[in-house]
Each structure stands twice: as C-alpha cells, then as structure tokens.
Length: 304
Ligand code: SF4
Image 1 (tube, rainbow, N blue to C red):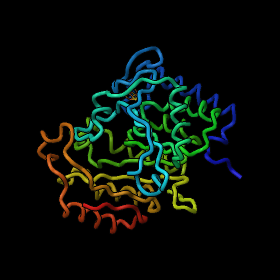
Image 2 (image 1 turned 90 degrees about the vertical axis):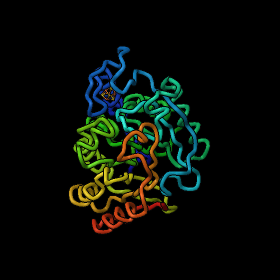
Image 3 (image 1 turned 60 degrees about the horizontal axis):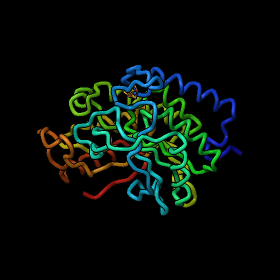
Image 4 (image 1 turned 60 degrees about the vertical axis):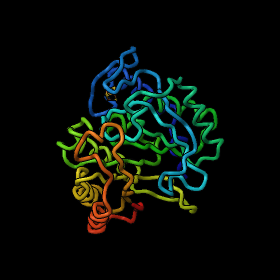
C-alpha cells in the first residue's frame, strides 16, 4: 500500500535530492515564471521581495474553504507574505503586496504545521506558497520528524514554474489552483503578468499529471487531486468561458471547478473602471451557464 500522505513515502535519498534542487532553485530563483534569478540564498531579494527565510502573515484553522478542504475540523492555513502576482484587486493585499507578516525560521514553519495538526485540522493549507517552495520543502521534512501526518494543500494562483512544482511532486497531495485569466492583455493590465494564461495553464497540467482529479475520503474530505478555482470578475475580465474551454478540452472534464462570486473592489481596484464594482447576478449566472455547457465535473457554486 502506498504511504499517505505521500510525503511519508519519500526515501531519504529522494528527500536529499529534492533539498539539493531546492537550494539550487533559491540561489538563482526560478520559483515563478518571472524567472528573476535572484540569489535569495545569498541574501538578495527577488522581484516578489521574498528573501531566504519564509515570511508568514498568519496561521490558523480556517472554515471558509470549499467543503472538502475545510471539512468539519477546519483547514490549517498558513498565509505566506508577498506574491509573484500583482493583482490590483487583491483581497489579501496587506500581506501579499504591502508585506505585512513575520519572518520565521524553517523550524518555526515546521512547528506551525505541527500546531495546526494538533488543533485537529484536516490538512496543512499553504496559501500563496509559490515563492517559498524551497523553504516549505525543508520545513515539511523537519515537521515529519516532529510527527506531521496530515496532507498538504498547495493553494496557489498557479503562477508557478514547472521546475518548482516538480519539487512538490510526492510532497503535495492536494492542489487548490486558481485560473484567473485567459487573455494576456487582461492579466498584464490587472495582475502585471502577461504570461499568466499560458504559465498557469501549463502549471495546472503539471498538477494534474502529479495527482489527477480531486478524490474524497469516506467523510467527503479531500485526500488527493486537483480542484480549480475561478473567480468571476466584472465585465468578463476573467475570460471565464475560455478558462472552462481550456479545462474541459485540454485538461480533463473530471477536474471540479469552484466558481467564486465574492469579488469586491479591494486595494487599487476602485481606480480601475472595469473592476470598480461587484459582479452582478447576471454575470454569475452567465458564468454558471458556460460551466454547465462545458460538461465539467460537478464543483462548487456560491450565492450572490
Ligand atoms: S518567486 Fe520571486 S524571486 Fe523567485 S523568480 Fe519569482 S519573482 Fe523572482
């Protein structure tokens, strides 16, 4: 029988190889598709402003994720500070863009994982982990020695490099991945990342290759696989129809989609005419119609 969570089945040799690769990655950073090559191990900061140590905004049990992630005991979220994306509407901007948070050592990050496990959480939910993949890897290995035995959720914008995701193979069991845009001009204008559509689509293909579609245990809690989140934006800015077309046509119809309606104009969005309001019921219903037409697996819908 395979080990579960998967990280318990990684051999010492494979851990060492992963850690060596993680050190190389952070010394010439290629964690995200910006490939800014910062020597973060040597004390430099990357374009995302992340350095050598993880910076953490908060860690606690969270009950607001999709039901298979939060379950009935909560998801053990660790919110990382900074982000390689620059979304003008980011709801988490105090820590993603303004840098609020505390620098921690690898041992402290490992201890936070154990703290969340001891709270009874179903999983460790790594929120905005992209720029701290090497540090997460080091911390998971330490946390295993401290008794970590709940699965990891990699909760990402999907602006991840394939090289970085490959380090997470066999470490992460559950991918909770955004697909935000289908159009490079929109992703450039509103998130400062023209290559986001192609980079995120390649990233979710890699996640799917590693874990397949979402699987639930007998209590309905996520045990493995990929779940995609899509936030409907006003004025069709998110390219919702094309995002569904990609998932259904190029990824798999088995991947469930969580269709999110909670957009509100946070951070700099009030200054952007296309984004300075919530979505309407018609816009959400239109997105639901496209989701139904696409033939994708049953996912999660929200009230509006
Ligand atoms: S994660 Fe940060 S440091 Fe690394 S390549 Fe991306 S922007 Fe640069």
